[in-house]
Amino acid sequence: ENVHPFSRELWGIQWVFAHNGQVPKFDDSTRLEDQPLLGKTTPDDFHYNPVGDTDSEAVFCAILNALKAEFDELPTLPILHTFLSKICQEIIEGDEETTIFNFLLGCGKFTTFAYSWPGRRPGSKVWNGLYYLVREPPFSEAHLIDVDYKLDFS
Image (tube, rainbow, N blue to C red; front, side, top):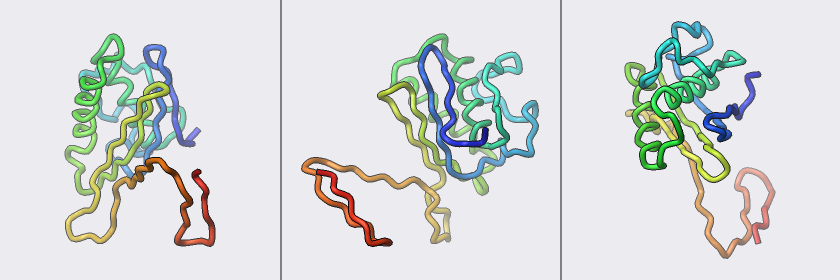
C-alpha cells in the first residue's frame, strides 16, 4: 500500500506505474467517486481501484480504467501513445499551475512510456521534469559528482 511502483494486470499484460509529483485532481483528500473519469470511462467502468491513498495509485487506476473503457485489447503502440497523450492532457487540464506529473508506465516486459509535466514553470529556476541519460557502447566508468563513488559499466 502506498509504495511505488504500482502494478496491475490488463489484457493479460502486467502494467507498472511509478509517479513523481502532485496531481490535485487525484489527491488523497478526493473521494474515489469524486475523482474525474478519464476518456470514455463511466462509473460502471471502475475495474481498477486504488488500494492505498496516494494520488499516484489513483491516477494509475484511472488510466487503466480509461484504457479498458476505450479498447477491448491492447492497441498498436502508435494508437496507445496517442491515447495516453490525450489522457495526460485530461489529467492536467484545469490544474496546469499546480500539477506536477512525471511518470513511467510499463506495459509488459518491453514497452515503457515516460511523461513529464511541466518541466520548468515560467519564472522558476526549479526543474520539475524528468531527467534521462542515454548510454551507448562502449561503456566505461561513471564518477558521481556529489559523493566519492564510481560505477564501472564495462
